[in-house]
Length: 611
Image (cartoon, rainbow, N blue to C red; front, top):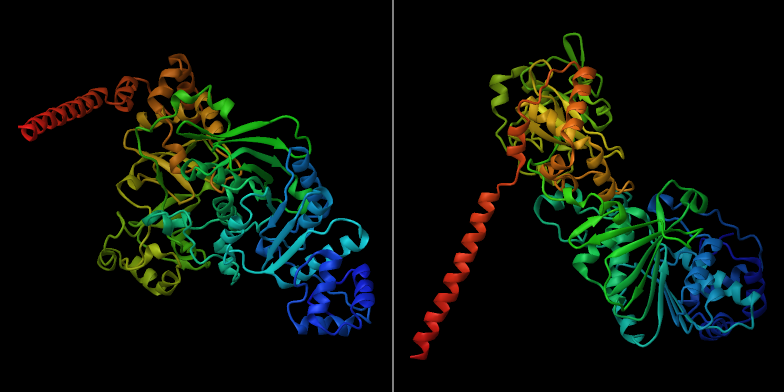
């Protein structure tokens, strides 16, 4: 038999049989529960009490637990929760108020009751109703086993955390030391939307991304990140601690956003846990801890949770630069500047079954395994992240149809100039209409994205945005046509082979590798982004690499790839990538002249007013 879709522990069942079997009044039952375990309004309504009384005479109440892992719901085991509470206690955390915004089955609450002796009040919030009962039953069982322990006031609220107003709580406990603790869902808002979950905030663009950033993925965010930011914003002026189990990528984002948010948090710590051991999942996750109501800090110290005596890394902000390894960064920060060339992302079409092709004899074959007869004019070789394995690439295994030369270009020309291609696209027009991204709204038929003059450069230097390696690739033309890259890749385009090769040598140098390792995060969804790559100052990088090393790298590249590139354009290349100091000085002079004129104008105006 089921009760509240959860199981009642046997000690709790025996307690109910003894204490509530003859209780008929809801208020009397709730009063007994406050005396027994401190939980206010244990039963929300008469129906709950009646349902309980109907079943307490039976022991057949086992319920198969639902699998909620697809919702990012990984319940913290009691042993880990106790270890976390003990760590906090050993590091001067002694809360009077406990707040757990996604309390699940209540293991963190039990661990806090077991560890902290000054607790006056506990608030737990949970959206999944069976977990509410799990938490209540677990707390009751704890006090049945430990009847002489002090019982704080406990409230377990059945609420969507995004709708719960924590501001009233923060005002009521302004003079108390608090601990906000928990393990919010490890899932993104877009994933929950696919699952039709109601447990997502109404406003998805939480970081106020504008324009294209918001509609091409940056509006997607981790639910745990949203909850963390909300709770820190609400309680950063309160005295106490914050401790959440979060994905490593979320912790990185929290520290990154701290520069702008300037919340009153300090002593930021990331304690790495073994997620496979603790949750049986392959997710990089850690315990994030910080002090509240402190002078803002922007650096996070990294530890091994199971051996937390010594810091293993430090990441965060150094002045206006965000880095993944502060110690390593200090040895190569001179090349942290601005790339002289603009990094671009590859093409995006979101219709791979139609737009991506393989060549078989005189035919192309699409992702539906259909033979396709096309003109060659709009068909280009294309590379994905998984294809970027060799230093020099001049052949592709896949092809793609490039319908536009710039974003928004009218595609009606295809019908007259490439009738076979048009017939193929028109036949599959329904597939294009199924694309969900709003970037295609009100755009010409068969539109693609991430396309421009730069896409047609004959020579490209490319890197995968998805993988953890630090290898750049030289992409050469295929049968006289430029090779395209998909949107998982980033690239620089060149019309000059020598300049492309020189850039490749600089980017693959040890100095460049060390720098990239110091500013990238291996657990990020994309190790490399345009923002990361644009920080590479090629001119300062070139100054740090001896000419002999450049020559040796060039000779090796020529030999291994049958190239014949010389260094005769090296100085021209250096001149090209060198910042234009003359223009900068001229601009500074203009600013100085402007300020001087403004001062003089102000003096003249003062004299006029005086007289």
